[in-house]
Length: 203
Length: 203
DNA sequence: CTATGTGAATTTATTCACAGCA
DNA sequence: TGCTGTGAATAAATTCACATAG
Image (cartoon, rainbow over all chains, first blue to last red; front, top):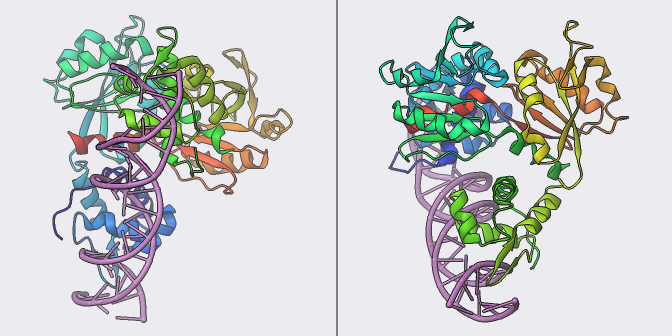
């Protein structure tokens, strides 16, 4: 394999492949790009091309060793070490996130939860003690470098600022607002209403 | 303007523009592609190109009339009529969605909520009576053609089947699972853990 | 003089098609 | 034979650059 810049689109697809492979695990040992493609409703050539950027995952004539492939993708995505994430905002959405079993699958652990509602602080959800927002500053010491923002819109930017100050390197933002951070910090925003807004166009 | 197939990417961006414009509304009457681009951190040429597919939104030397532009984008996205949506699954995530104020902004109304937990059925959240799942069949009669799936993973596919049967044309799916529907039905899936899974790569 | 709208140029991503390995 | 890995071909999206309108 020669050098190639890895397309962003490829990175976006790797978690999709990973999810599918985790699902197919324990069914077969090997899978061909064709079969995986059919399962995920994508093109087989796309899958081979994506993997080719990282080189030599498969065996010609046989296919890809599923377990090995999962390990490789996790390594590329930097998911082979467990990641600790902090949740800020334990409202309905935050509670849903805490209860969501899907994170473990990708190697995440929600290791801290914050809220500024005095009634909630000190309480426990899912064995996690809810801390007050000023304690965000302890994140660096606790080696928590990812965070999920699930606070009301008006508090989103100041929350982001506090997170950046606490050394957080990646943020999953659920507020319907562009948040501004230094560019060394990666933000992924999910604006639920905005996604819904695309639907009527297609129907 | 001559005929062009409209890129999917353009459609994906229109709600982003709309969100920004709604934010800027009441500040100025006009905005140039340059200023809007700076505000949204995109390229001005991108904005002009996107709008050009629909033709003649702006005034050379002046810019775009914000109110008019909002109206045009809503019309393209088919958001100028109010849309009713049904929510299936009133757990933490479902409750968060019900409480979320962002939907109104784009012209959505969550007009029905369903759950299969007998303790919840009949109860009210946000002035909305929670109905039992078999009542999904009433959606067609009630002219509800969009739905949000916020049920546990194992119930997602059967929920989707029931929705399709009830005449739903668009689905926003929060379960971490590929759901299969006839291709006249548009599905947008948001898998929260999968989005988070992209973050460690960048940090 | 400013800012749009749009062909043309460029960049990026996808798909094809096949040589070569197991 | 079956399937990978990858250059080459194609398609799609973005950006440039400028003629033109207000």
